[in-house]
Image 1 (tube, rainbow, N blue to C red):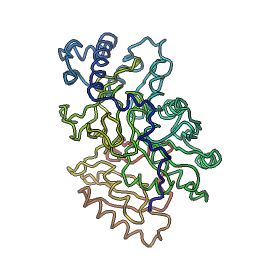
Image 2: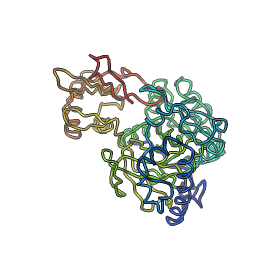
Image 3: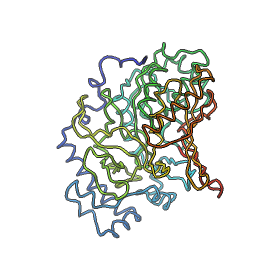
Image 4: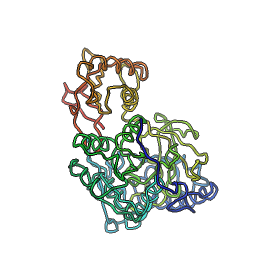
Amino acid sequence: MSHARTLIDPPASAYRFQPEIETMSRDALSALQFRRLRAILSRTYDRVAPYRAKCDALGVRPDDLRGLDDLAKFPFSLKTDLRDAYPFGLFAVPRTDVLRLHASSGTTGLPTVVGYTSGDLGIWAELVARCLTTAGARPDDVIHNAYGYGLFTGGLGFHAGAERLGATVVPASGGGTERQIVLLRDFAANVLCATPSYALNIAEVAEREGVDLRSGPLRLGLFGAEPWSDGMRAEIEARLGIVARDVYGLSEVLGPGVAVECEAANGLHGWEDHFIFETVDPDTGAVLPAGSAGELVITTLTKEALPMIRYRSRDISRLERTRCACGRTHVRIMRITGRSDDMIIIRGVNVYPTQVEAALVDVPGASPHYQLVLENTGGMDRMTVEVEADPRLDPVGYPALASEIAHRVKSLVGISAAVVVLGAGALPRSLGKAIRVRDLRGAALGNSNVRN
């Protein structure tokens, strides 16, 4: 049974950070997008040589944009573009105009470097504040920010947004979970911002320490930076006694603040005054009609330092453009189901980690902590699901639990997998994004890798 609470009065639909923008008519939004798109296309073409070369190769110029539909004529931007231009080759302003730099970890190659002007930082804080209020946060809240600070955009992004909202922000960052629980209790936090896997870690440690966070003022969580299932949402809500909202962003186009769930919990509102959203076929790049699942493509309309035209996010979703029950008019990005580059192919079957998660989270006795281990034995790919048991489950029940999980994975995902049930705490805990896949298929060649 869920212990999730309702949001404070008045409901989120009656409190908006920027009501005139959040409820703008579709015609007005489209007109604003077109004006901003023409300006950003011209600016990017003039100032970013690698993107200009891409346009010239396709024979398109900014003047070819006569309507929003013409955006499909222009080339995509890719993560590899940022690495090829490392570190500052895609900036549209002099480096001296860049007030802050962020970067990815670079675990799969050169880090992707992103920059922000003073104007960019102001817009970023504004959009995160808009996301916080849309999710249900208020200026008189205490916001506990457990996203990592530093080069990762999550921590500082949420920090600035919380301050822009006027809330009290606790810059906890990641790690030191026992101390975070003390701070959550002593500072009477109302809102928790973290990755969903770390929120579960907090809940787990609190239970072990005998601290009941459900009885305190914590009522709302904003979770993102990794795909998570509805089953994990229910688990977080039950164990922390909160309402869990999904938030979306990526450093290449801004950071957190691109989209967020409202109280209707029916998709994430993508802020169309600052972005254009498309879905495309991941294989062909063809634009898909609204409502069709595909790869999310995002164009920035107001970024100064690092404009991104048609950036391929690799996230799989679909777009819903009908008016939301909350009254906001901005497009809804339906729940991210996975990433095109996280897709695993096992014996000809396409598998996303979140599909496996959805298959196991509702199994009695299973916990949400799992990893997928990929190996190749005898020339055949093999997947093993390692999952922790609920601490309350007697180990004598592990074989039956493994059998039930294997059956559900086969039924719901369509692949036979070995299942190894582990005791509570056996899998490593992440302070940020959870590591879901250990791909050992290239281990014999010294080419194994670990993926989020």
